Image 1 (cartoon, helix red, strand yellow):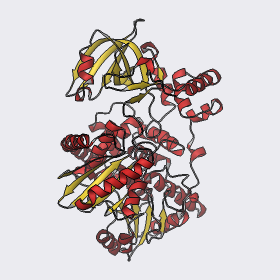
Image 2 (cartoon, one colour):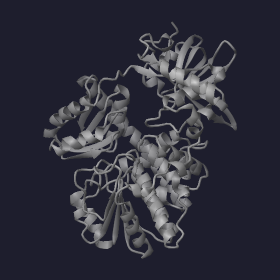
Image 3 (spheres, rainbow, N blue to C red):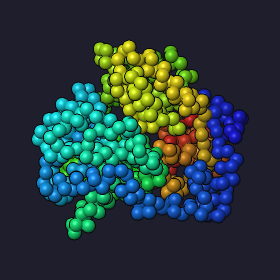
Image 4 (cartoon, rainbow, N blue to C red):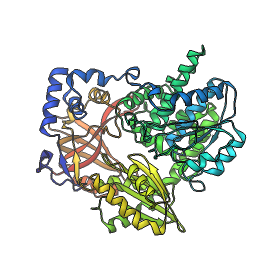
Length: 584
């Protein structure tokens, strides 16, 4: 049960939130883990939240891919898809890869391109333009590709593209996807998708790149059975990890192992595109899951959002250092352009949504000329600000294109698919946490009302936006690099596995200074003489920055996440501060 008095007595922080600590049962579970497993108590608090029993702690902290990777053949059509792909590759057939324009699509395409290159083959890459063609295969593109190719592989798209795939009459088609499927499948040799209606749902958490990776595992197995040696798949796991985190796939089950192993591969700097992207982003540490989602992901997505759609896939697939450097620089610039466009749309959408009210199960906004490449990011910002599913739609004349983001426990993709099936949208679909839609102006109000009703039945709107959940209390002197390393063993952190958040009580703010446009750098101390640096990104975009800055020399409770800050070869622990409160 939540403490109505708040953790550390905080019922209203400087950002207006109540702090909630772990309930008593989780505190007891953490203590039991601490006693029986001998792990630091903060680590045990994270494991208890994840439901890890003491006897399972060791294997949870060291997940092995070989133990968690499913047999690819549990997915329907997998053997057929692998056989068709391998036959085309061995025959030197003309292969085209039709990929979505986001990180998952680009990573999926790069997996296939790199695998084919390893056996001396090549393929045509086709990524549709977000504005001119929209999401997924379209009849014109598929017909054109089929005229010049023997096999088309649709990755991260295609499950609902019946008319488009039917237009590819001159070529075979394979679909490797993870978006929610309909009652019928499109015309293709194979549709491999853990979210097909006739699948068990056991692997519904996989992103498209993981589905592609599993197909390549099956392809390599078929090669071994024929006496052939396949390419090294473990070297490609950096792409799978990138897609898993950037596509906000839940970091549970095999996804944890894929990301953990993929980060190790990424640290070896094998992929020249990722190396170049890290260089332009001035990344000076080994990549963590945070960097996949917030450093690499936005830059790779920038091409599909506001630039040329295939830039991200080309970057991830290239083995040419000069091409990698050029593509990375272009994507970095496009990402800067995207941020400027996003800021304008975000301001207008937030004002509109606020005027409509934040108490409904769905928060939404729509406007003329809003760039379709940023509506998804703005939807994510609305979701974060309100703890509600959010949809943002940009109109060009009568045609609207929108994107939505959901909260944990609310399946947005299924709801949008349902209202599309009822004719309230021109097109719509996606997965639990993210979805896209197309509609006319006349459909806007009825569609949003119907969607809100469906989301309310799933519990959207019940959670209070003012609660900040904390895992434990921690003193600054206990925040050591060794502790952060131990906490990272419980990761990676991301969707369905949030990074641990700690409260540091009664800290003295010894230093506070504005950094850049909106960030706050500060130093915290305790009565034992311990000192700790902290950074609050975007602090001056709200009242939090001025409030903390004004209390330099005073005491505050602070809350946030621990991370390692490396400066000139020296590692120190830094708090990524998210909130603060006045001691009672």
